[in-house]
Length: 175
Image (cartoon, rainbow, N blue to C red):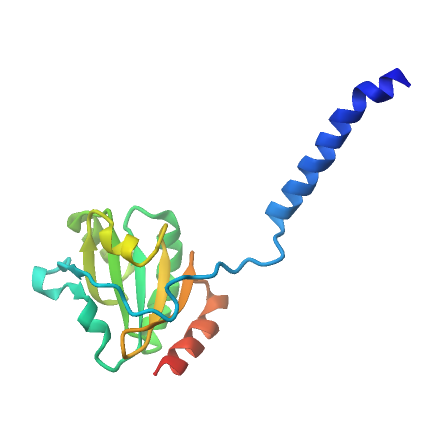
């Protein structure tokens, strides 16, 4: 009986840890609600990677054309994995704009030369201020923006081939 009393707290802790781990590994809902969906693109102005005047700014998203905005970086491993899918989306006629965070122009140009360049425009965000304004905590992160400059969808993490139909449907509805 005394051994049971001694080992009981360890058993209870083990059961609690197993329950907690199971919840982390298999959550019932993987979707992360975004506070930005339904809001206008935040105010920002970023110099371009090719030329300062070919950057990106808020007004670019209110021209009547829906597009993707991808927040990424050349140093980001998941962004490398996402690159082929973005190239497929571009070949399918999707306009993709990018915000490169905490990056250097030379590193970004080398990344695009190796991985392909699906972006019509890229704004350089060396300090991450625009990324923060979008409520983005990491890279990659992608937003569908309608032609009035309103964010209608946010995708956190890598876009995979399985995500493409959802993104294309969101872009069609945004048009």
